[in-house]
Image (cartoon, rainbow over all chains, first blue to last red; front, side, top):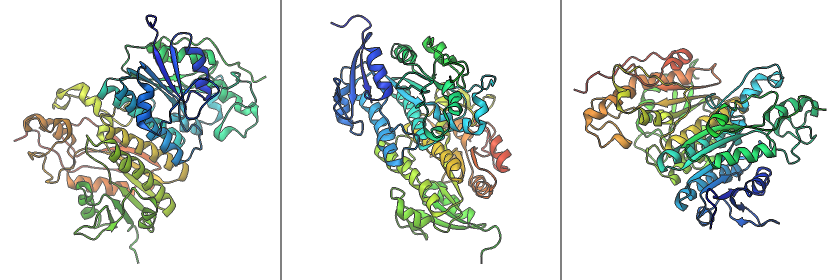
Length: 264
Length: 264
């Protein structure tokens, strides 16, 4: 028998960086079902989000779905975006509805505001800069990828209102495989070719530690009174360009980690 | 030889209500190429937006594309939304880019804020109510249809910033075939079954006359210094729930018509 409060959570894209963090960190509190596109070395249910009906079967019995699977590269092209982030995300919401799932946590991205960063230039990331953006900031997607995440957020709103699913969209910052913002490899997309010292301020603003990532998603999963919310996901970094107010207020998220102020 | 300022404008969905208005009203100023899914009684180029390459050919030589073709019913289901509003809209933007088009006017919808209306209830439409929403209001889509329009707006932003296309998104109110807000048939979606007197205040807030519709799109087409904008499209109605400030300020749109205050 399940312990009181113990839930069954299905995670799409469980083989990715965030999925790997969440499989490990949520399993202490809930029963995790890892869904992956291909068979893995860890126990997983193979379910491609491009297909609706197998997803319904995979979700059956789960209270919550955490939807991470996506074409996640900033330069992902249309066929992949369409299959994974649009059709796939719609399949996840629809399958959750058909399977009687109560809640979906959708991995969105800070890139839905990415053009703001491009327009502001690198001084935005400096410690003395005070500009902060939040979920009421008009959308400014920097890529097809970001446009597809905006669609996912809108779709989530529709499912929340029309079908009573609870939906939390988490606009994620950077979750790093090595969990270290001073890692040379950190950073992707347009800035990946810059020297690390130039990339570091941006990483410092967006870093989400593994511990905080686990805690944030745990709060999302356990927020059973929210109907729909958009929150940002970073650690308690010394310079933040996105507001954590909603995550704190709606989810009682209290980040424990902080990126260092200096890159070395 | 073209007159100075005379442009070639391709209109998708030229057989619809808005398309019929624009074909007639823009032809006095510009050369209109009507694109339709099926052959029509009027001269048209048959081009289904579900296919990219024929669209590129259809757009070649056009300075501007007005993209109206869509699954436009509020209760449109996923296969139609996917084909027309997502894949089709992406094909329109991509074909415009490939064909060397300079600008796209995208028909979005006030339904991207539709849940605000549902939450506010019918008093929102009363003449004494002063609540007004604009392009900075957080999105609140009331349908899959509205979610797909949000995707189109985001895609437009991406094409504007990444490829230099000029993009204006017009969140349309109600353009009525008979051009008369006192028409019994006006209204669609969830409110279509209500008595006309109850539907009228909503129509009064959203009506866009044929004359104002033509003028607004003409302003969009001729706004050659805008990179990207979202504006609302209604007439100068006695009660408006959406701000026309952006349309006035960015496009010099001056609506000439106004819905009557009373339904009879």
